[in-house]
Image (cartoon, rainbow, N blue to C red; front, top):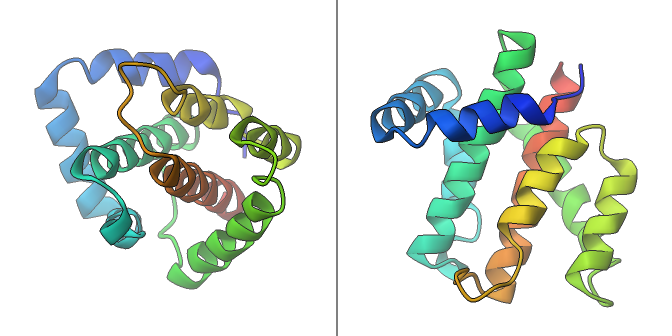
Length: 156
């Protein structure tokens, strides 16, 4: 699959300032790839706050739409492939998180083909006063998004 340029991601983020566009694209995602929303909505939901779940869903939508802009038609995802990638992603994450989240992301950047999408996730999860994401939420969102990025990359 082609690399997703930052400009594609920025254009999508800008379009989502209009909540009608955002709602419409969420509905399209639900219609076109229900597996993605099913994956992120079940992904450790008991451990995520409502805010963290919304962040995961939003990032998943941006990832999907970014890929769709570049390749036009995304084949239906396979649940087994997504689950296998998620398991692999957790193994990769776990082997590097003991140091800190930055180290874990650095390792993911070494192996991903879609650096701009991963950078979006990393930037979103940066700790600051305005960001109310727990450390557990950060990990779940990071790994889930990485799994989605890699699964979409491999199926195209």
